[in-house]
Image (cartoon, rainbow, N blue to C red; front, side, top):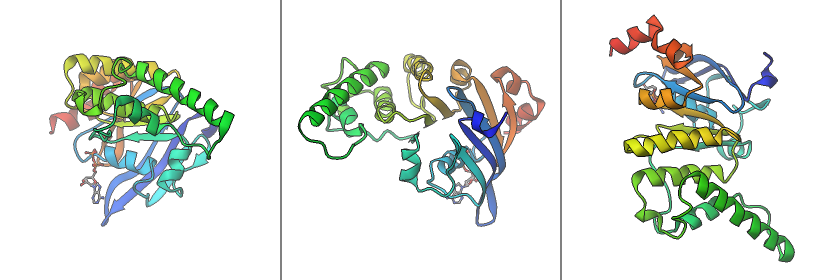
Length: 247
Ligand code: ADP
């Protein structure tokens, strides 16, 4: 395959913190519209990989090619503009605002518009809010303040606040942490729904959930790829078994 065929091509990515290589010559490739899950023991470098892709952390060497464009020298907001959305572990919704307002606020701001154009924009915003609210199971809760939502619903709202920006790649850090079993099931359903339009890269520990959502799994260990493939493949890989039993 050529580079252009991948949505994301990470090659030779390395970052050192005071001489310690948290990510060490890492390479992996994402196909458009797949759900990829990164697993691995604590300290494997998973969060740092997402930080590098979204520009929060700058790499020491290596390349991150996204839709053909090199990201490593771009600033965080420029990377967002390229179509990369990142959700952190702790929900950061606006508690005092309604679900509707949270989504509306996240709709990408165009340049200032007037008259007929503003009307057209408002209609587009309403349609986008409604569509996203349905996707995240909150279309009946549009008028509720975010503070009244369950932990799981807040996580979905935050995913919705990213979806309304139409990212090509959505990165999620342990999206089902703290969720009930029912909420986990619905989150799997949500992620599968959105791969019609988005590629999803997830860090996850819950192997049941990984099995439910992953097209492919990348196992990281000591900043490197230890194993990659279907969940069955990586689960039965002796290298993976050894690392997990050793912990
Ligand atoms: P994971 O998400 O797989 O648990 P991390 O990416 O959080 O792993 O961390 C990988 C390693 O890099 C850990 O040993 C961590 O302490 C170290 N690390 C991460 N970020 C920094 C930083 N900003 N400064 C120094 N060390 C860091």
